[in-house]
Amino acid sequence: MKRGLIAAAVVAFAAGSAVAAAAFYALAPAGTATPPAHPAWTEVQWPFPVDEWGTGKAFHCAAADCGAAVDVYLRAKIGFCDCVNGVADDNELDRLSDFSLMGGPVATIDGGHPISIGWMKGRSRAYAITGGARAKTSAFAIAFNDHCDAVVATVVIRHDRPEMIEPSVLRFLNGKTVLDWTTARLAQ
Image (cartoon, rainbow, N blue to C red; front, top):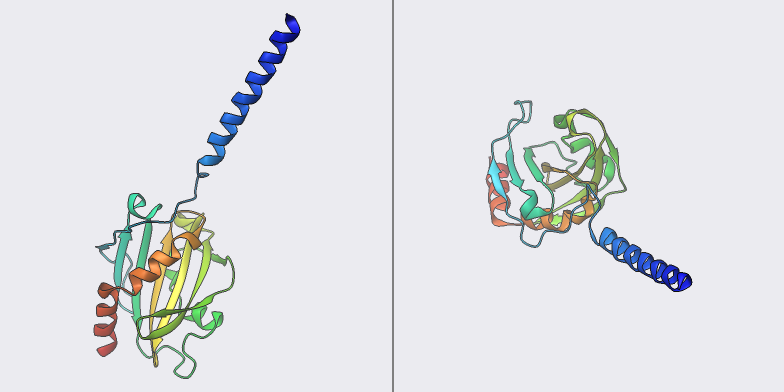
């Protein structure tokens, strides 16, 4: 009888452990997000002081809509892009980036890659913000150009998997709201 009871206890314990492990691994670890199905972008007030590039446009997507809170900050940098090559490499992207607005150092996560926004070409690269109030936050620098003029998007994501949100951000940047603003800014 004791052997049967012990065997039943071992089987029950193993089954309970398997159920607990399955439940644990089915949940996303803290700090990660799932790709957004239908992100909802809301324009918000520009939160940074005015500098030599002026103000830009700021947009927010709540965690409920994007899987994690995401902020997109856009600025035009008229006449500041490499007129011959555009935003063709990570060095040019880093030069154009607006991470100085974030108030902390950044570290690259990996190399950048080419992107297209409307009629423009550019580059995107993921970073980790490693200091300041936004430490342990992911970010993207995205820059694209029209001849010598660049538009820089700084994307701040409150989780550690920026690659999950990048496709949604690129769709947003290719949408009417951003392309209309870009056209107007580059025409000035």
